[in-house]
Structures are given as structure tokens and as C-alpha cells.
Image (cartoon, rainbow, N blue to C red):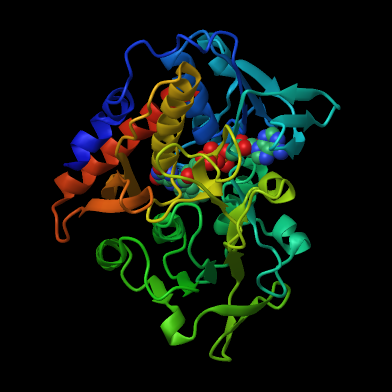
Amino acid sequence: MSRRRILHGLAGIALSGLVPGIGRASRGAHVVIIGGGFAGGACATWLKRLDPRLRVTLVERNRSFPTGFFCNTAVAGLRPFSCIRSGPVGLAARGVSVRIASVVDIDPVARRIRLADGTVLSADALVVAPGIDMRLEAIPGFGPEEAARNPPAWPGSESALATVRARLRTLPEGGTIAVVAPPAPYRCPPGPYERVSLFAHYLRRCNPRAKILILDAKDAFSKQALFQEAWGHLYAGMIEWHGRQDGATAREIDQVAGTVLTASGERVYADWVHVIPAQRAGRLAQHAGLCAPSGWIDVQASDLSIDGLEHVYALGDAVQLQPMPKSAFAAYNQAVQCARAIVASFAGAAHAPSAMANTCYSLVGRHYAFSVSSRYEVSAQEGLAVANAATQLSPLAAGQDVRQREAHEAEQLYRHLRRECFNTE
Ligand SMILES: Cc1cc2nc3c(=O)[nH]c(=O)nc-3n(C[C@H](O)[C@H](O)[C@H](O)COP(=O)(O)OP(=O)(O)OC[C@H]3O[C@@H](n4cnc5c(N)ncnc54)[C@H](O)[C@@H]3O)c2cc1C
């Protein structure tokens, strides 16, 4: 399947397994979704699209937030923060009841949730999509206080992203940034390398003698050959990557001195240490006891249900569904699969799981992007695990026209997902 077909096939995947007559038994059934990001928003949209008679309540703590997708472009000044702002309130026009409130407790057996103001909501089906939390205990010297002063902005709030942008802009002439990259799995595998590329895009013009060192907890990273080729072309001599095999994993950080002690015992000095920490499922999922020892929620690929709980589902970055990455595109596909399964189960109909897909574009310059696309079959033989059926990478040594076209496709995908998940332009 070509990237273009995957991109334009989002809705096709969603509709391919519709069961005739679905929705007959769902009158009045109430689905409560926790989290109004890409995963929760897409699930709400598809539940109402598949069966308008369902009562769907989506609970999200923030009226508006910056999206992770394209947040690096805002940090680098390629677009204003207003262009990446989104939120779920537009979903009311699709018949979704949107509550702006924090969920403080989940009883997954009774399918009841409690909001910060004490309100209790009961559901016939519960969908948990709270995104991620940072493991701020993972590296000594980078705890909650340091993260508040020097935020990972993954993406966090608009002010966190603005702090990162300000640090970039105030880097001393010819200064060094050390970027500490996390171990897998984490939100958006190519995201740290896209961020570094767009830092370089800004610095090449405004601070051309600056350097960026990546200290990675991994031996390799997503789209590595494509990134490294692009860094050679666009930002020669500016970016250095050191992996785990080089002993570069951060063991301790001293923000005041600006040093990172690495696994090899070396102390690396930088004018700014930007840390993207290890991650786990959103705090609420941990608090509710929904996470496996890995820190993520285990789900069935066929319907996104959580084992051992009836009519309780989880989606998006909070779940571990290897080899699907944690991306907005993957979250969207999971949401569609889950919505179809919920509607089928209320109708007493069989749910035929569909294949899922992902495309991740990475921007390394204003008009320069490449991508990786995968299609994932849901295999009954493999205990309903996701089997990686096909992966396609952009070619190396491609012309500027190819990179420019992919940058345009990334923009199209972003707009499409915003419309689908948030009902915003
Ligand atoms: C730098 C970067 C670049 C990225 N680039 C891309 C890209 O190019 N393409 C792509 O597809 N993806 C990209 N992503 C990934 C994408 O942003 C995430 O995969 C996506 O946001 C996951 O959606 P989600 O709904 O699971 O989580 P989120 O978007 O985080 O949504 C979870 C929501 O749950 C809410 N919530 C949590 N707890 C509670 C509670 N107790 N009560 C009420 N609400 C709660 C949160 O407020 C949040 O809004 C990127 C991410 C980053 C950081």
C-alpha cells in the first residue's frame, strides 16, 4: 500500500467493516470517553457517525491544548502557536456531550468515573485515552522541579513550548545544546530527531556556529538514515548523534552546571540540556490500576478492550500495541477499530477487526519531509496481536521535489486529523 493510499484511506479503513443493521440495540446506551486528544476525539466522532443514537460523553480536562503533531514547527518558529491549538469542544456539533473536567477516579469494574467536582458518571462502555506521563524519576537530577523550569514540552502546555522556543532563541552565540533522547517506547518515535532538525533549521540562520549533541538511550532511531542524510545536506557539522552503544545514555543531569554524566562516565557540558524523559501511560491509568508492569495499558488489537474487564477499552499513546508506534495517526486507527467494536457489541453483532495503519512524517526543514508508513494486520492466530504486514520508507537520495511533496502531505494529514478528531480547521 503506498503512503498516498494510506493517507487517503483513513476513512476507508474505518468504513470497511461496517455491519448492516448495526445500532439496533444501542438506543440509550452511554459511552464515556476519558481524554479528548486525538484518540478520544476520533473515538467520539466515529461512535456518533456509526450510531447517532448512542449517548457519548467525552471528558477532557483542558478546553484547548497544543497538539504534539507539528509542535516542533511552532517551537522553531515555522508557524504560530495558534495554528497548533486544538480542543474537543467542536465535537458538540457532532452530538457528543463534551465535559471540560478532570477525572480523578475510575472504577473499571462498575464502569463509573468521578470528576474533580464530585460528579459521578456511569457508562455502559468506558474508553480510557489519557495519553502519557513522564517518568521524572528515571534520571537523577531531572525531577519535577527541573522539568517545570526546563520543560520537555512533549508537547505539554503552550507556555512549556514557549519556554523551549525562548531557550533556543537565547542560546549563546556558538553555544551547545545537549538533547537527551528517551528509551523506547515513547510518544512519537521520530519526534526527538525532528525537534533537533528544526532547532538546527532555526540556528543555521540565527546562530550558525551552534552545535547540537544528541545523547540517546537507544542504539538506533526511527528513520535514522533519512535523518542523518538530511543533516549532512542541510545542517553539515551542526548535529552529532551518540547512541547507547557509545555509552551516551544519560545517567545524571546537573541543570545548574549544565552537565550530563553519561553511562561511559564522561561528563558532557552544554549551554542548555534539553531532556525528553522516559514515559508511561497517563497518571490516571496508573492510579486506576489499568497498567501492566511496563507502565502501559495492554489491550487486544481486535477491539482495544482491556483483558479481564467488560466493556472497558483503552486507546492512543497510553496503550502498548507493538509494533504500532505512539502517533496521532495510529491513535486514530485504534479509535475507529474500537468504535466499530463497541457499536457491534451493543447490536449483538460480530465485530470483524480491520487492518490498521500508520504514517509518520518528519519535517527537517520548512519544505523538507520524509515518512514511514506501515500497515498492521490483526491476526487471530497470533492471539489477536498486531502483525506488521508492510512498512515503506521514503527513499534516500531523493530530490527536493519529493521532500517538498511529503512536507505538503504532512500538512494535509494534520488538517485531516484535526477535522476528524476535534472538528476544527
Ligand atoms: C514532538 C511531537 C511530534 C509529533 N508528531 C507527530 C506526527 O507527525 N504525526 C503523528 O501522527 N503524531 C505525532 N505526534 C504524536 C501525537 O501527538 C500523539 O500520538 C497523540 O497526541 C496521541 O493522542 P492521545 O489522544 O493518545 O493522547 P493526547 O493527545 O495526549 O490526549 C490525551 C488527553 O487526555 C487528557 N487527560 C489526561 N488525563 C485526564 C484526566 N484525568 N481527566 C481528563 N482528561 C485527561 C489530556 O488532557 C489530553 O488532552 C507527535 C508528538 C510529539 C510530542
